[in-house]
Length: 113
Length: 118
Image 1 (cartoon, each protein chain N blue to C red):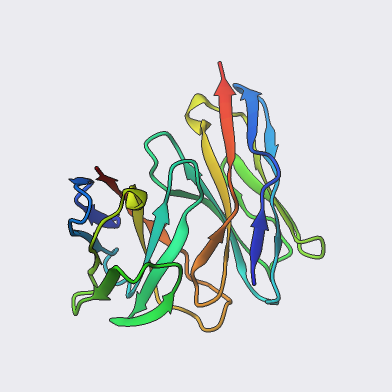
Image 2: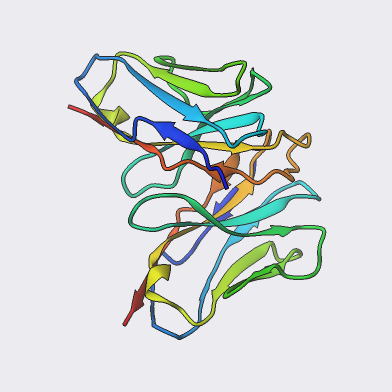
């Protein structure tokens, strides 16, 4: 069964600084996608970025980028130039069979002014 | 761009009552997923549908049922509500499964329905 582990329950960062959120996972699949979702205080689940496991190049979306280490089964999210609006819960997710998503427990990120 | 629509956004029910949650996927998306998120928890998969057929089932109580209609919208029916059913219920949609556990289909989430059982 697929598992996702986020070892940092809470993190904080100063505005304009860079922060990295960690995620490790386990899957028996050879081809898969990985996702980071953001859940702000409104509790909407917003897709931040996705990574295709067969691609060696790390995905980037504006200030958000990933460090994908397939052999180590690691998928960290880097947020550059942090903004107050980045304050949210961040979930790492992996398809767990029949396409349903398996989520980590989340990392609560607070961006301080 | 059109997003996933869920209704109602908030719902308050008494114990033992029945609730129906509705989900309208993004146009052309044929797959719908339901998730339950308790306070301070990660979302937990309940059930999914592809082309109007149930495609997978998670930790969904027998008191809950769901279906996907010909226009691809889905409804989650919850009966004999319990206090523990209070949670945020998300619907997500995607463009069909690619087969097996290798997903190429990104799931887009609706705003959720907050159910409170008193």
